[in-house]
Image (cartoon, rainbow, N blue to C red; front, side, top):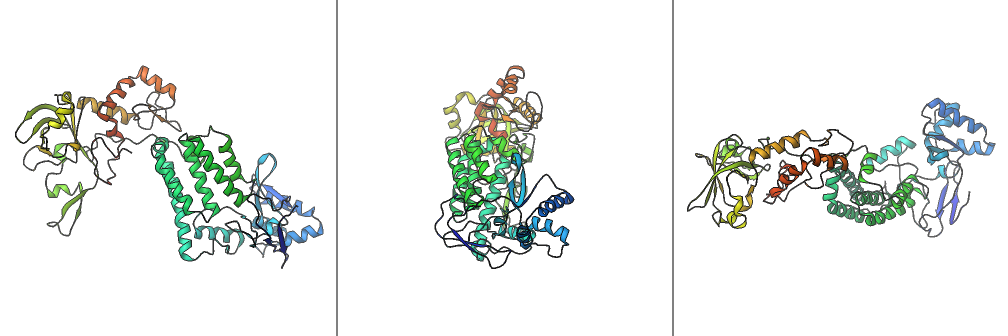
Length: 503
């Protein structure tokens, strides 16, 4: 055992108080020692573990036996044969056995150091993080009591209520961020990468005081960066995380080795990351155009105050006083153009909705509908499909009035073709569009982003054998794919065309 820059005192045989004499650089080896006894994690049976510990104990010298028996035991009433295993279970530390197999060991010095959730500084007691717990304070305290039989009193656990709450909020924010990342899939990570990394950077600043919390945030940020192919940022975050983990666990810890993998292996992908957490990559959820809650026909549109309660959040008290305020969700009216007329009020678009009912869309904008003709004259033709955001029907006639041109869009394809595409999309949901398999992960089509495939081979076969090139072309008309990928059930603010709320 080698020791540097430290002094210690012993008040009781089971206690060692070690204090730093000077500033010790990060990752400095304070001392190194071999375990007195160790058991691999693969031995889960109590009798097996007790047999191994007892055999090791019988080989100890008298002094070693005295040191071992003086160590803390959270089960003081246990009999002598079981006492040795109970001491082992109480004070053993994580370590690696032969061939890097995980296990636990009891050390004559390290196992008697005080546990602390954070590393210490000059003139403070040198402590050890003897077990891993990354939850909120209450959860960590419970784990400490379960492990040692008494509450932890380290500086982090003894924080005043306001700072303790702040620390817990940071931990919960990181846990929520991890959960959200696992739920949005590979494409979501790529599309939201900037926001995700911004959130991580904010948490890095917030956790500056706590090495372990900051290490977790930095490592999570490294994983996001690697997932989107930003290897430079990923290595920076992984390197910073490694330094913090060295402070907490030491240079040979599993956390440090995991960071080293990211620093030396650029092939780690988001698939590896999610699978290690028991998660899978899921295709982007698509909305069904047959869902009348989000794609209502004219008969289902709000037409009066009473009908509007199904579409809007209301305020006030009493049925007579409630007035519509904000939509409770997004919706879009779809219909196929059958005729066009021009009046003094504006452009009239006569169309058939999904039920076959004839509806007039009256474009009463400042330009009286000329905005549509001016930009794309070939859009306003019979057979094309019209879409109206937040459509409201007139009470006594089949009319929808549009006063904001950004709430209206025309697609260059038949409504029947749109519904045919919808059927194929729903049929392929969660499956490879070519072979129909449901693998652990799927990759979206590189062009339309709606259909998904096992790999590039299946995508190429889909284009060659299943007519996917035509599907891609149609889904690109007027950004039709936005219809299927938008989150229609989540209203945060009003949308307009082109859709600004694609998930």
